[in-house]
Image (cartoon, rainbow, N blue to C red; front, side, top):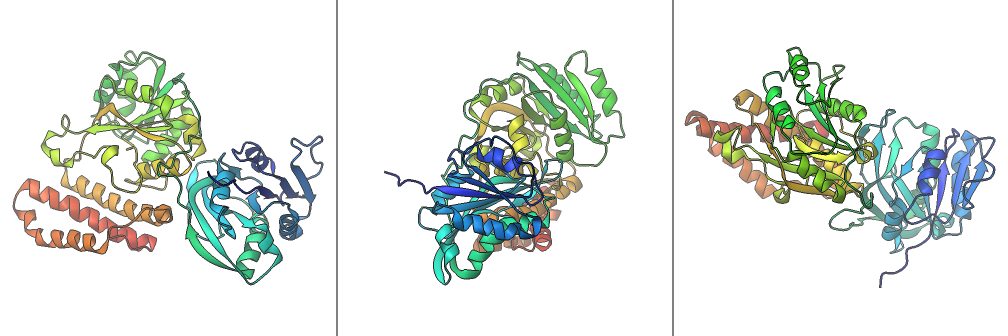
Length: 490
């Protein structure tokens, strides 16, 4: 029988007076907090209070840090956790902290989603350390010094945090943890979550009420017509719409989209010319979408007639869904480059490819949408892994087939693979503390040795030249990304 979880009280540091987001999220925890103390100068306070567990300590900004430590020492629970006032803790935040604390850990921390002012993701924090972390401390250690305890990292993204919080808020929230780090000998370790990483956060879902299909496109006039014809031939019969998100096209992309309106009455054109990038265009599509379920595809591919039906059929049992990519129709000469299905992926956690995926809109909103700082690859892995680490269900729908076009020109192929390599190093830097492992030294040596030994392939045949360029560009991208991110990912 599983031992009981320790009770946790929560201190909310709100020296600027904004505490409602954190308190709202705490009142919906799957493991309820034993008490909530808000340190704030706010006046007047709500009357009556929204919950009997809620207490207020009125302090000015300059004394808020001391007040947070005092509130933690005065708590009647074994553990005390800390949030910024504008933080939003995901529903299983306290449950995960309590699970990791059962072995009498002195300090337990989890990862955070860092959000911009517009609530889109800026990045993640999964590094061991207090800076940027959401955490809990063992209360008795705040009364002593010189003791030994564990410092446990929960490799999950369980708190949404605004990137424009003030220094006063961060200082107040970190005060108790700083005391513990200073006065206690902490031994680092990692708490492994369940193997499937899913907490079923969303509960049971029904069928989508309205599906929005988002197509990011930039100068896609030549290929977009085939994709729009394929969408017009979908077998899906429930309500849906198509959003062509124009990412600054200078050709006739908009005219092509307009001509498709008779066959796609739900088609809309969304302007996204302000800055280039598929992730930016996809986020604009999410914001404009009227549907509760959003599917993504590319303008240079062709959807199978049953594509949308398969994605919508998988929606009730999943939060984010990846479909299959089939290159045999549009790129039959490159059969050896067929993208691996999710069930055969070997990089950390399975991911849904951006060219063929779908998610509930509330899920995309919670995890901060697509990270717009990724360019040329890696953004789909990042999106899927954030969903996994937030506790959402990421599933695969094999029947949701997209006919996929591979790069034919060697220059475009080399640029794509180089960008993939750079993104791989960036992903390793971001997710290594959650379990993303780099290749071992033997594999690295074999990869680079193969490249050197097969240099003659560049002059032998077009297929061998293409293969060498694919591998060489990716390995070069690993080197470039490693230098940029200060990690060793070769």
